[in-house]
Length: 142
Length: 408
Image (cartoon, rainbow over all chains, first blue to last red; front, side, top):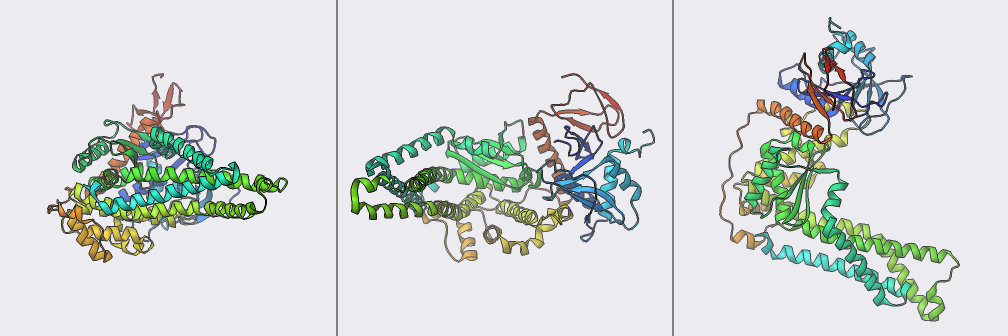
């Protein structure tokens, strides 16, 4: 799959049986909706506090950042905020193919997770953090 | 067994005869209008039809499979799928193992194609392999094998060749008519046969236009005529082959559920559907059936079956639809068959198994796409590299360890 930012071929990183597409050039991460769905069902099964109303709630965002194209379907993705205000900027495919996180965006997310954030948002973001501790600087050795 | 079903065969023959007659008429009018000889037109139609037949004979299934992006797999590529197909091939009494294809698509779908039961293919999507457990997958495969065994694929192929020939002829005829009418306004018929030709020309034009309009509707008619009833029959076959009607019923429920999800996934809600995974579906699915009445009926019939024989399916069908479906010839020879219990599989294990299934399938798809797979030397994280990757080393994004790579 091609990185939506710099069009280089992304590698696939398998973390806890979930596959993530990772760009070696820009450290951005593509979270495919199939894998996202899989992660959510795993979290549910392991008793994580995900309730029916506890959704990953993206809000549409107005942002000057260049619009990227979905690496799966090629449609222009929408900027969305994840989590509570001010939230973290991500790109969401209009057809629901998945979410794209710039590497900077991921770092913001990890720092900004607040008590108001829904459990789903926290779980997914912290999963990304645990998948790329080195890249995101959450690993001390990094 | 199904080959003996008379009513089914009569319908099929009538369908083919009707379409053949249509083709004949199209050729006749083309001949009358363009070639001054109806016979020549009919011959032209036959040539087009014959050529399409030849293409279909040698290429038919591979064209369909290529169009859908299906890849053929061997037994070691995906043993689970291959085993299930083999089981159902044996259960159905099919003589030759169909080719097995996988389509890289998260949607839940499967189809069968081929020109005869001896030269058939079954294709399933990766989404289906990920989300269905063994009993459900078995149900779906049995349903597709049912289509092969019941000669549905051959009829579909025949009908689509005829339809294709009609569409091509009608399309070019109306095109030529249109352009020759534009340029100069005088067509050849008018010059040669004076007054009487006028009426004939109008008739031909009208018929041509009607055929043009009819062609896509014909496609729909074929779809309904063939698939509606045959879907039920293939379901009945699937119940018989698997001896477990609940497997297919459960697979259809997942299908109904996922269809609705995709439909609902507009730009605002798309990322949200992840929080509504399939497992909660079992009960809530009922509301969704409203949008898919045939699917709901099919599930209802399968769920209400007492055993797994054709007679059980017939009884259940009568209850749900208040009509009959299975011809007497099949019922007469049917011995009572007990449904088998579900394969042992706990609900808690279900999700773990689903993850395993997903990785099993994606492993295969990466392999088929020539991705290289390595485990990080430090943390063991599985990394997959695209064929274009030819750096000598790779820093693991998880732990930062620099892995030295063998040059390919």
